[in-house]
Length: 202
Length: 162
Image 1: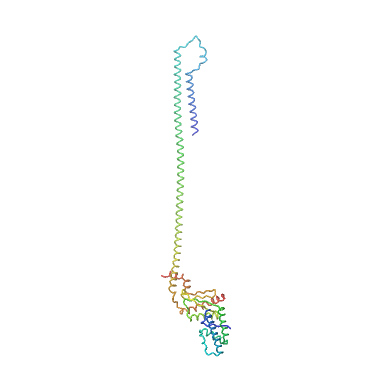
Image 2: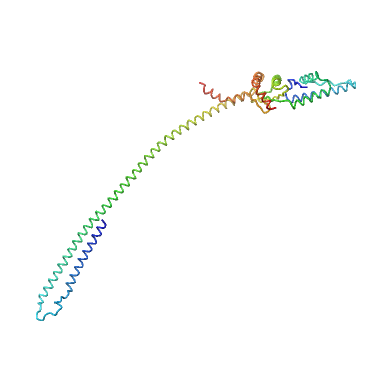
C-alpha cells in the first residue's frame, strides 16, 4: 500500500513538474520570443507589416498564451484535486486497515487474557477445595489424637490422685500384727528368688 | 565349732551387744575366780544377761568349759560371725515387735542361712508388706509398690463403672 502511494505521489509530482515547465516555456516564449531565421534576416525593405496587424497578432498570441496557461492551470487543479481525493481515500483505507488489525489483535489478546484468568481461577478453586478437604481431615485427626491424649492424661492424673490419697490416708498406724501371716507367705512364695539373690550377693 | 544364734539376736548390732555381754561376763568370771582364790568374801553379783546371751552361753558351755578364756573365745567367735555372716535388711511399714522379728529371722535362718543376720527398718510410706534387701537384690512386696504398679487398672475399673 505504501509503495503504491509513493509511486502515485511521484507520478503526480512529475505531472506537476511537466505542467509547470510547459507553462514556464510558454510564458517565456510569449514574453521573450526567439527570433526565427526569417526574422533574424533583415526584412526585405520592400515589405512593412502593418502595426495594426502586428498589434493584433500580439494580442492574439497573448490571448492564446493566456488560454494555454488557464487550460494548464485548470488541468493542474483537476489533477491535484483527483490526486487529493485518491490520496485521502487511500489514507482512509490504510488507517481503517491498521485500526481494524489493531482492534482485532487487542480483542484477541483480551480473550487470551480472559481465558488464562478463567483457567487460573478454576485451578485455584480446585486447589482450594482440595486443600480444605485435606485440612478438615487433618484437623479431625488431630482433634481425635488430642482427645485420646487428654483422656490418657486424665486417667493417669485420676490414678495418681487416688494413689496419693490412699498413700496419704493409709500411711499411718500400719498394723504389722495382722500382716505377719502375709509377710511370711510372701517370703515362702519368693523363697527361690531370695536364695538366688543371696547366693549372687555372696 | 558352728555357733547357733538365738532368734532374739537378729542384726549385727545384736551380735555386737551379745559379744559385749559375753565379754562382761567373762571379765566378771575372771574377777570372781581371782577373789575366790584370794578367798575374798565380798564378791560382786553376776551381771544380768539377756535371754539371748543366756541361751548362747548355755549352748556354748554345754560343749566348752566355763572359763574366761573360753568365754573370750566365744566373744571372738561372735565378732567373727558378725563380720562374716550373710545379712539381709527387711523394711516394714512400722517398727516390728519382737515376735514378728523372731518369726521373720527364724524363717530366714531356716531357709537361707543358719546364721543370717537380719536388720529391721521401718518406713511408713510402704503402707504395708515389706521390702527385703539381700546384697544388691531388692525385693519390694510393699503395698505401695503394688498400688503404684496397678494404678492403670484403676482407670480401667473406673471406665467399666456404669
